[in-house]
Image (cartoon, rainbow, N blue to C red; front, top):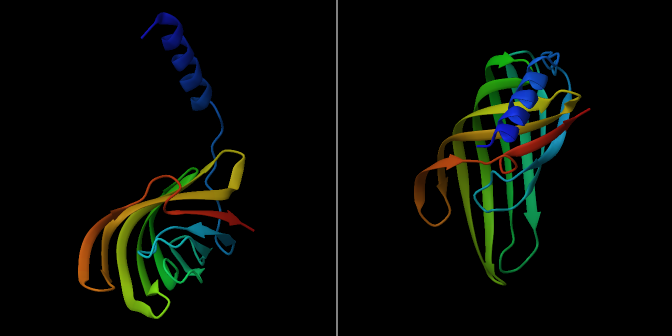
Length: 164
C-alpha cells in the first residue's frame, strides 16, 4: 500500500471517528420496505414496528401471478432486541410464513417456513429514517421435502425499511 493511500485511509478514519453519533430512537415508528427472506425467492413488501426498546414485530407479503415461477408468501416476524449502539442494534428474530409456489399452469406446492435468526439493523448518520438489516441463522422450511438449512443475507438481501 502506497504512502498516499495510507494517508487517505488514516484521514477518512479520523474524520469518521470525530463525527457525532446518536442512538436511533425508533419505538412507535412504522418502517415500510422490502425483504428477500422468503424461500420462494419472491421479493416481499414488509413492515416493521418497534413497540419498545426491546421488542418489535413485522410482517411480509410477496406475490407473483406467473404460472411457472410465481407464487405467494406471507409471514409474521417477531424481534427481540438484545442491545443497541449508536446507529445500530443487534437482535434475534423468529419468522413464521406460509408459502405457495407455482410449478406450471395447473400445479402448485404449498408449505411453510420458520426462521430463527440473529441480525443487526443499522443506519447512517444523517439517514436515521433508513434502516439496513443483515441476518444469519437457521431456516426450517417445507415445500416438497422438509429442509433445515443455514441462512445468511448480504447487505440488501435481508431487508431495508424506511421509518415514518
